[in-house]
Image (cartoon, rainbow, N blue to C red; front, side):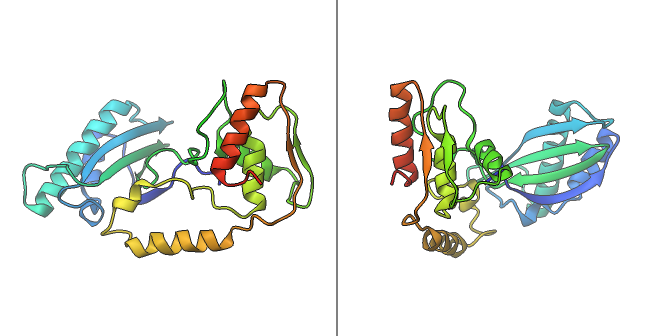
Length: 228
């Protein structure tokens, strides 16, 4: 409930020069993840306490290394990139490069229920994390006196009903049929649906001074399936 993204780790290595970054990126088994028609790019690079710190340079060098590796493996010079998307995310920490492919697509805080928001809304993942840091459980009362569009009460209700956070949305990796069989997604969804229990008795209250945002909160609760 609290993660912003789930990445598939492709590998990690140490690099202090761009040449090293290129060669070690090229050495990773990209063909095991990205098919011939896959659309791939380095969506984000972040660097902390590392010799290599320019995100744009890291991104372009790694993309070139990936192209080199895949063209050698697939024996093609040009990639159509008209298939499923494989955005790569890279993190450098003290010269250790960790490379992952993003399975989530749109950030996981977007649960798919919040159609109506207010000014400066809290993200659903952060609201969940804060609730989980408290001693609250479904047998205790929860009161949010400034609930705005209802994120805290809705997340609490989803926790109480054992409702999986991503049931109202899709994920980028659903298109990776060679990596994750469709049956895995169907089984996971079926298991999640079986676990939902909206008959539970719980006392969750939300209040706000603004009648308009309460309309939004009610609408969002309905979208999330916890309006009851």
